[in-house]
Image (cartoon, rainbow, N blue to C red; front, side, top):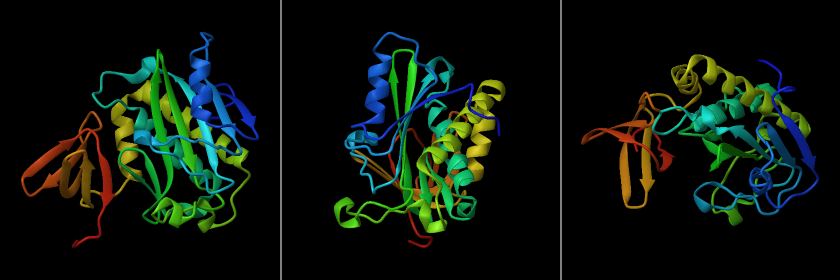
Length: 249
C-alpha cells in the first residue's frame, strides 16, 4: 500500500469539539484545503451520521479529512462511502492484524467487529470538497447504558497502537483507495468492498422513515446501491439504516 506522506497534511490536536467542524470551517476559509487531515486525541462534540452524536469511549480515533470532490463521478450514490470504508477497514487492520477474522463493513460504510459497530463514517459536501469524518472505538467503547446498545472496540483483538499511528494507517488506506478509484473506476472499488462486507445471503432489515424492508443481501448495483432480495422481489436501496439479522430470524 502506498504511503500517504504526499497525499495528506496531518494536524494533531489534544482536544477539539469536532474534527469535522474544524475541516468544515477550513473549507469555508477560501484557502485550498484538499489533503487536510485533522486528528483529535479527545473530541467533545463529535458528529455522527443522520444528525446523531458520536460518543467517545476514551482514547478513540477522531479523524477528519478533506478531499477533492470533483472525483465523485456520475454514480447516483457516489463512490465516497465505499472508498472511505475500504481505507478505514484496511487502516484498522494494519493497526491490529489480529482483527482480520473479526472485521466487516456494513453497507455502506460502518465498520463492525464481531457483528457490533466499532467505527462510523460521516461524509459531507462543502463546495468543491468532500469531508470525511472517521470515528472508531480503539482502546474502549462507550458505556452501553448511555449508548443504549453494546458496541465493540479494536482492543478486543489485542493491544492497539497510539492513535496517531492508527490515523496514519487509515490515511494510507484512504490515499490508496482514492487513487484506485481514480485510475480503475468504481467497479474495482465495488469488488473490493464486497470482499470485506457482509456476505451475499446475509439477512438484513432496512429502516428509514416509514421504510421497513426485510430480505437477503444480494450484492451491490453498479452505482453502489444495495440489492435486497425480498419476498416481494428484488429491491434497490439508496439510503437507510441497515440491521444485520441472525439467519433464520
